[in-house]
Image (tube, rainbow, N blue to C red; front, top):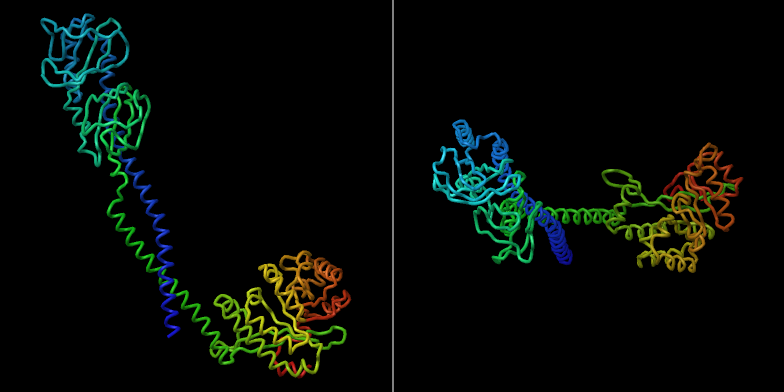
Length: 527
């Protein structure tokens, strides 16, 4: 019942964790999609503005090109002049009429012919360049038109009339999606020359006179939130095309995106939950396998002898563990210790190892009080009360009990300092395994209660070889002597290595030159 409740609790925990992760990830994704879609909507408004502006600019340039050439038109409005004006109206669909006005403001003729008598209009403005006015109602067609004009060097004006019907087609708002209005504006005053939609201006923002590209998003004087994009015409900078879209059109995520995000969110929630459940089952399965192996006594100890190189006497052992797997055979610690450290069963396994060693070594340590027995320990175990309790019991049986830690384990947790000090006070010897491969510094040797240094086998292997590790070995030995630390050499495999180490004062050796790790019955034969 307890296991069932525990599993249900884990499943609920995994759902909550998956929900939090999915919500965070897809919250960020939704923000990203929102920003991208808003930018895309703005770009769509800008594209509509540029399309309209390009179409207007193209026509205005064509018309202006003709007006610039109008210097050649005969002011007497002869037949050739009338023909040229008619031809231009014919080839340019944006034009409905072209006329010539004299210095006094009289319309002398247009593309329909010479006017008798001339029609009085406004006097030409005495300034160069293209200009506009209107809309006006044309005398001949009686339709509203937009007027473009240029004053010639002789003071005559040539003008061209663009019917508002053409502008209406060019600025047709129905050709574009989600636009609030399209306006052709006077760039100085902001007055619409031609308009489609409900024209409105930003609140508290001065955007006229307008000379450059402008965009704005915010509140408008009709009480709405809008985005506008405006840009003067290249052919006639006095005029500006302004396009607007309601802000809600920019910020609304499309249904297809919402559906996609929802499906992805649900899939990620389910997937993460399944992944977390699988991880828990794997950890629980790994833990259950190891604990089952312990209960079936499939785990067993082997002992690596420590040898006095001077007398060749076995003076101690390092306790190592193996797993006699029913299917895979004998497994070394590399196959199951890392997994045990991940799933937390390392404590039960280590307690079992000590109990097994106490049972098997009891007769040896009772007869040889100076017999050293060492166990490999990591920093996590030194924070486990049950394991420390087991070490205390082992210390009562084994007078020369030693625990071996790596340099990383010694420095990984602050509370280890006090734990090591307590163990030293109980008579437990502290050794640093694989010395020289980790943090290699004097500060922790002086800060922690460390009695013994085990020289890493890579340094031992360098003896007699020309490489950079041989001088390091000598430096390690020298440092240990100065600090009054005992030394053990690991991985001694040749007579040359044993002799060299002995000459350097390192007389306790461990390695295949002497013995391999062995089961208890073989150890008893040599002890």
